[in-house]
Image 1 (tube, rainbow, N blue to C red):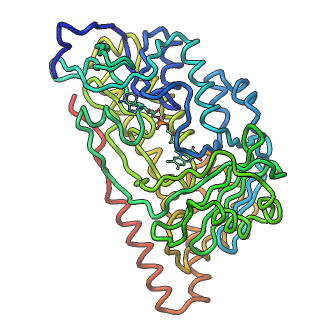
Image 2: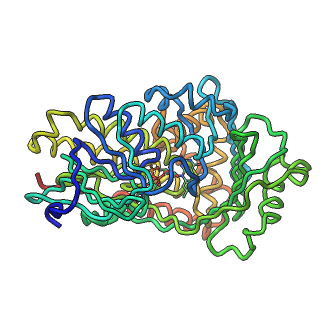
Image 3: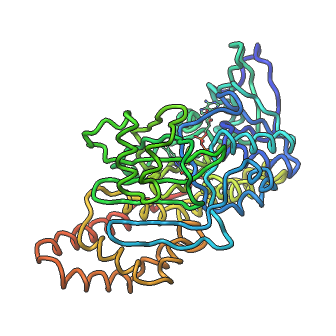
Length: 437
Ligand SMILES: Cc1cc2nc3c(=O)[nH]c(=O)nc-3n(C[C@H](O)[C@H](O)[C@H](O)COP(=O)(O)OP(=O)(O)OC[C@H]3O[C@@H](n4cnc5c(N)ncnc54)[C@H](O)[C@@H]3O)c2cc1C
């Protein structure tokens, strides 16, 4: 499509943001406050549930948006300890003065929405973007369908797709996925009332099973299982989750059986990791629309907020008027996003892998053996450090030496060749992150 049909009502904006949850609202808050006129278009009712758990490791990102007070007022307890048990390695550490949070999305998204409106963004709720408008090879708006079925054209100098993994904007502009990583685990979760949980985040992986537990807002405890895709148990039956969770998470033993599942079980099966181009002429993708990674590290919410910070810096009144300024800035942002996201997506893949090796186990034991490593691992998950700071060459060499002492030659050979293969694969991907300006 090249331009709005003459019969369409057209409303002009500086920026149209498609998708009004974490990434979209954060963009809208920042851009509207900077004086740009912003349309925020969301297909769902606002606020509403979405299929996502919600561990948040860096609440300072909310302070940057000026919504930390409202976020904390939702009632999720600050999580001051992180209890991570991977196989027999105890990687727990205190979060000290940087507590984590487990805040249900219906609560979080409502806070962000209010802030976007208050900042001056015009919110089009229950309105779906169905087409893109183009002029001279650049996107310059969208066609959106209102709840009553009528259509409206929203013109803009840039269209930002913050519309999630199955991004409509990506489809309309032809932004293909690259560096796709099939997920090995699925997710089943529920909210339990009446579990007297300490304010601790728990993650445990033993054999093929993986469980995450954290108290959240409204007095509930989130209990989530991530079985392998080929697991034979029927996880839609809550008793499976209850049984595996009480085996893996000590504080649930004897308490989860007495609790009540509120609102049924939720699940998501297909969760391949991927990247999409960060930007093109007249468009950009932010949040899950541009990158998704294994949920085992629960980073998507903070990533969306961080990406919104980076992308919004490129969008000023001046740059939006001048593609010769805007496009190079968007290309830099795309490269930075990939460089920032890749190491965490690899760590996520490693933690979520179903088949683990003797080398993986020894690496975890090396990390568990040092308070400094455990604290640094937590910093990595909160994005205050990069993964290479923790799982660097020294740790890898120690793990290899330990594995060489304990494992059979065949197991060691398989483990090393698997690790080298993954490293080669990772070094070879996705060098190009730029569009023609
Ligand atoms: C099972 C699961 C568990 C997760 N657990 C965690 C966790 O513990 N911690 C964490 O940080 N992250 C977690 N994530 C990731 C997290 O959910 C995402 O990274 C985060 O939601 C990204 O936000 P977003 O705003 O980019 O996209 P979304 O939250 O997906 O929002 C996109 C919005 O765009 C709207 N939209 C789509 N198409 C259109 C259209 N055509 N027109 C208008 N609107 C449209 C949708 O309705 C949706 O509301 C999890 C994800 C899954 C699947």
